[in-house]
Image (cartoon, rainbow, N blue to C red; front, side, top):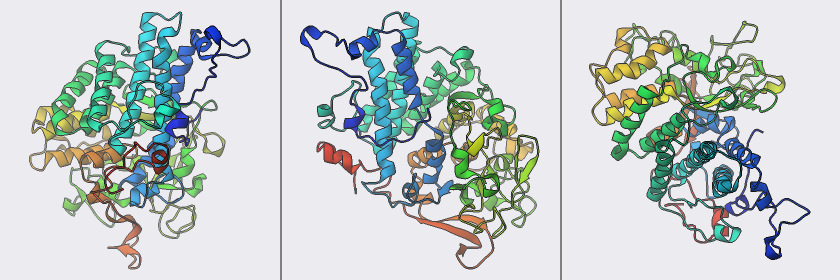
Length: 534
């Protein structure tokens, strides 16, 4: 059931999965099932809404998203999205094309259900509306993923024909945003979705998930929408009944799935639906290939236990010769460095030594070792089956993100005060393990927007959100130009101030804030214009 990024054009994506035949008097063919017959079955709606969920997102897409940012690096050039991170991608880039195809395939599935659900017999109004709500939110998720990357995109809510797909034009981004937000508002305001589900429906989209997605979209749209972000996140905080899980590291374990912090996730299950993303980031000593690895810039983002940023920390707070001591506990829960460890299923610890040249996990020891000297710990599943197959859920929206969105919008509006800080950032830092008042109390000095942004990066690292953040903040040109770095070795050759040079990146602000419309789509449809500079 695991979904990968299939390569479809819009034209192929909208072709029917059901056989349709034209006969006199519109009689159904006796030798095969038709569209008409299919939607006459009560179970067809459930099947199709479940199919919509399968295309929502997947483990690889989410984790590799950070390789397009200053958080992580992927060392395999012919797969995933390395070219997005270093700025070498083109109009023929396979990853760009796959995202376009994958999302439009998902939109088509949602439209199929929404266009035909009124024909399905035997559904109560409540259940019919719930299915409509689920498919509408998933479709909004797809459109958000598309317009946030491509800008103006083809927008449609019907199952279009191949001929239509070859003539459709790009809809202005502003119109797409309005359509998506209106759809989400209709689902929320009309109570199409329940606030929660029973045990048999865990993982389905709730009213709060719809509101969380709406908040994320509003935040992406920037200054004019900040008051709306404050309003909707405040409603989730006061009415949603969510809470932060006591232990940060437990969030990303099978044993604590579906906890009170999770608002929406991708549901996996051992044997039935698994992913192998661990193989991509674990060290060789645990059977991994470390194809995806954290960067030094992410390590440096984590503050000290007494609340100092690394560049501003006094010697009593930060020792560059012992750089992982006295640090934000989320660093050790997210990234594995020399001396840090993975906890095995039997309770034993597997300590990693990633120093240069040390077997088998050390930087530059082998092609299987990390290209940065760091490994990912978040989403390590010690219950894995053979070949590192895992049934661990992948979180898309969680309560900490709602608190951070609320704090950010207030900071941008100049309204983040001590009370709002205690309600958001203090809660998050307390859960992380901070106890020093300098880290927990409302800052007496400093830029609150920068403080909240740093907090967001540390809390949500490697959860697929950093790329959208640096795009909407318009900071990508600052963090994706020049060399990105790995661990400190002290060597003079191939380093900057002793830090390993990993990749020389380029981000052109006149070009790279939007991805190109895939050339194969423009070859099929001459009405598709191209983005600037592409």
